[in-house]
Every structure is written in structure tokens, then in C-alpha cells.
Image 1 (cartoon, rainbow, N blue to C red):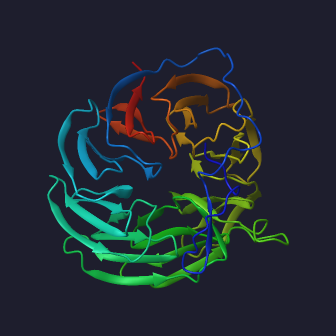
Image 2: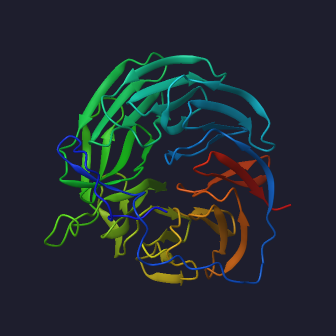
Length: 381
């Protein structure tokens, strides 16, 4: 089971200590799964194994009809999104710690020793380059760039075709940070990322220059543990807004152009945030699922039926919200009121990252990846 802020790693990394997200059991026992009335019919469409995840944050990358996957043993593969049929599977010859980032021409993963490996969409290696630090976050791939992030606060931009390093952006080290996969989003020449200390930044994709920085949360408390207020998960974009959540801080949405707050709400999440046209959704540190109105940050509903089950960042489907848990279960909740609607099992190992929603040929699928490397696709029959 993964729990935040219970164990500090004994290794010092670039002047900062990391709180392990996979540490010892929480003193609160997870809530046993209860009975409920199933209101959504969901079936498993396909499954496969991408290679043991080794408790890293591997997440599928869906690009039209294809889904790219990776595993800790060095496996990278492309499968048909609708059927799971494998188009190719290669091994990059090194243990991987993060993946996958992909666009229409480039597939990128990261190794445990800080190597970024880029492949073409046929599985042929294009280049590899070092970033000099641990990488837990899938590289972001878009607009001709591959952008990687290290746990010690560096962002490195590479030319997606050649692997040439184009820029490097360095943040000052924090005293204590959470060991988590804080993601990166590239959009219209901008790189959006959340940081330790509750900061949200916009970096220029072309040169790595800082365009703006804003405070999502202000660290509070007298001890270093109390003052941890890291932005968690991957920023999400909608229209002219970028939305994020923090641990021991706030969640909110901000203007894309300058980072000015549109709304914020005092709420803590150890994973991240999801949004649709109406609401933002998150799971707090007690695994209470919450919906917050994007029109002012007002609470809409809460679901506390899965307390301390270490829920993932939610994923928004057309009519339901989906979350994974520490036993490999996937739970579907109704968007309008948060009521449990369906539940299916995978391989029994934790799901650490948000489920991935894929829309292909008019069909909506939900794809999850477990720490054992199991990949499961679900859909309405």
C-alpha cells in the first residue's frame, strides 16, 4: 500500500529529502468493499501484460487507434486501442522508471538511471540522452519536442527527431518533497507543470524560459512535514484554464495566459485533479472522492465509501468518473451525485496512475495499468 509522508528515504538527493509515496501502511485500515446497486454495465474488452511496473508510474498513451505502453523490464509496445492486438513489442535493454509519452511520430520513455529513450512509431530507437537525475514522470511529447523532468527540479527539452538538447530549466531544491509522478503538459508552445511548494509554472517550449509562475498553495506549519504543499499529478487544461491540486494545500483553476487564479478551494489531494465542463474532481488523502464546481469552487458532492483505499486521480468519461485503488479494483461513480455505479477487478496489484480514457471510432474505452504490468481495457458492451 502506498501512503504519503510516513517514511523518509535515507538517501539525500540534490539537497532535498523525498517522502516516499510507497511507504509503510497507514494506521487507518482501508474500508472493505461494500455492496451497492450496479447501475452501469461495464465489461473487460481486452487485457495484456506490459512488463512488471516495479511500482513505477507507467501510464498508457493513447494516440488515435494505437495505445503505447511500457514496463519496468524495458518493454515498450504498441497495441490496437480497440482490440489490444500487439503491433510490435521491443525491449530497450535497460530498466525503465517512467513512460509513456507519445505523439503522432515519437514515443518516449525514461530509465531508472536518467536516460530518455525515444522511438519512432514502428518501435525503432531514434535516440537516447541523459538528464542526470531520476525521472518518475513520463516524458511529454508534442510540437517537435520531448520534455523530461527530474525529481531534483530540472526540466530538459530535446528535439524530438534528433535528441539534441535544446534547453534546461532548473528549480532550486526543496528541503522535503513527495516522491510522486508530477506530470507535464505541452500546449501551444507552453510547458505547464506543478512544483513542490505549491507553485504552478509556464515554461516557453522553444527556449525553456519562464513565462509565469503562480502560487496554488502557501506552505504552512512549523515542521518540514507540515509545510509540504506539493502540486500533485498532471495539470489539466480546459479552454483558457489550467487546473491543479496540491497536497496539504488547495485545488484551483488559473488563467493560461498569466496564471491569475480563477478559483481556489482549501482541499488536499495526494494524487491530482480531473475536470469536465462543470466540475473538478479529486480524491483527498482519506480517499474521499470530491466534486467541486468550476463556477467558484463550491462543493458539489462527496463519496466516502472507499476510505483509505489509496485511490488514483479520477478519470472523466462521458457520464461517469473512474478511479483505481490499491487492490487493483476500478470503481465507476455517477458524475451527477458520486454514487457508486460499477466495480471491476484487475490483477490485485495497485493502480497508481489515473485511468486513461480513449475514444476510438465512436467507442469509449477506459484503460488502466497496474504495478504488475497488467493492462486492462473496459467499455460498455
